Amino acid sequence: MPGGFGSCWRRWGPELTLGLLAAVILLACLGSMELWGKREQRAVAESIDTVTHGHWLVAEIQSRPRLEKPPLPRWVTALLITLTGRRDEWLMRLPAALSALGMVALTYGLGRRIAGRQAGLASASALLSILYFVVEMRQAGNDGPLAFFVTLAVYAGWRRLHGHPPQEPPGLPAERLGSPRWAILMYAALGLGFLCKGPIALLLVALALIPYLALARRLRPGLAALANGWGLLLLILLALSWPVPVLLNDPKAWEVWKLEMAQKTGTAGIAHHRDRSPLLLDWPSLTAPWTIFATLGVIAPWLRSGRSLRPTLWLPWAWAVVNLAMFSLWSVAKPNYYLPCLPAAALLAGIMLVRTVRIARCDTALASRARRLLYGHWLVIAAVGLALPAIAWKLRPEQTGWVALGGIGLALACALSYRLWRAGADTTALYPLLGGLGLLVLIAYGIVAPTYNPRNGHRTLAAQLASLLPPDQPVVMFYRELDEGLWYYLQNRQLKPVPGSQPRYNKGFDLLDDYRQRRLILDDQKRYAAEAQTLIDWIDRGTHESPYMLIRAEVYDLFRHHLGDRLLPLYRESGVQRNELMLVKVRPTASPATLATQADTAAARK
Figure (cartoon, rainbow, N blue to C red):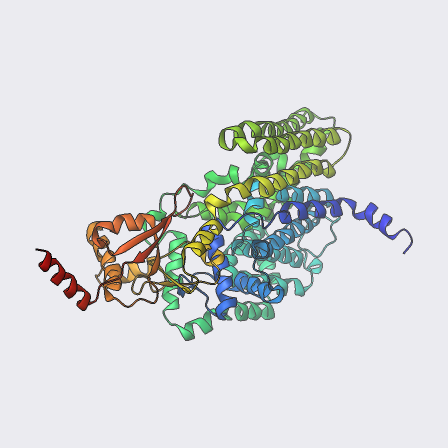
């Protein structure tokens, strides 16, 4: 096609460049880190169990049913394993990374339709450079897919409410509504989000769209436009497609789900979850390095000078602020809960950035303030880049050279971005900043992070265990629980629990059940003795599927005076930044005939 590529590049060059940068930032070195985090280890263990044992309905980890999380991310990963035959870290993290790419695209589309092309590019660039977003979306788990489907549902809801082309001013007249298919897509995304992490998907979208309609004074016609019988039926079918079969198989699952939701909202009464500060205080770290512009987007609609921005900002404002307020009321809310709302923060930041750039180029009283704000923003990011080598020198001296390269690259990228803006570039002035971030990702994940694998991961431990365990011993017992990452790295071995040491579903469920049945032991020493007795009874039974057992080092130290010399320590980890494990062997018990012979020998010597 004559001139096809050149014409396409001239028209879509900024979008294509943004897509290439997004691929580098989100996909590069995706498999270089071992499975470190608890959420990531559990998600991968579920997927491996699904493929290995065919547990598609309910996966098992720690040899017990895993009912706390819905199955869609697990199904997707298990399907990828089945289709490709691969089980490496890169594949395990791919669904979340692809979800991140989809969120960047949807943020661009939503920003463009709300406030124009430049706002769309700026918003997508802001999301792609939010550090927390990049770190979280490069991990396996349920949070990434949930965030994607929440973003898709909000985008589809906007398209249903606003059928006008991007260049027309936003409004909600009935004759300009989008196709009803957008409403069906919204409900489908809600159903798929429900299959990622439960009812929270519905709540996040409702707290974005309903307050937006109320603030825009279009609540009744807007809800009428979003109502769709076929879409609602699709949502119900998707949302119930997993819980109903699970309940038919195990009616106790309902109690597990109630407890899980109570724990997430802080109403379960479990004390160790109540030491978190309100999520509002995490706003700067959640939105860095765009905190200033995102915060301006939060307060702008309430200022006299920001009245003209209200129709533009109300949707991202409601999506970001109302959900943040909700999570701040939860005593146990963690930062990852807010991940599905980061596109809203990016939209606020992108729209305000574009407005600030336009003001800075005008001959008004506010122009000098806008220029100082932009200059300060680039200067702060550059200063952080220049400070990275000093931080690395204190924490990881041997990696200072690589970190210095990334930090200096980021500072130079900021200088280039500012220079391009001064030369007249708009949103494309952000691309050098994204390139500097891409360089940091390559260095951080490709060079620096792998040096922490031996201390944070389980590959080294799995290799050590393989050298210590006899080749003809396929089964290794474990007491109570292990880090789930060991299931991934310990190949050709079956990990089985010591009978009686495992909770039925999880520790919280058993604690609640013990409390209801008045079996809960409040005295720590008595509880430790009872737990140690479970292990002692198994050891003294004399018949073991395997004499080798893995146990957490802290638990072994706690039980040592109860166990006597029943266990022979073979290997103990040290210097790792996770739960240290021990490999022990049950000491063989002498037969009665042997004991009699030993007694006769001792008597003869006397």
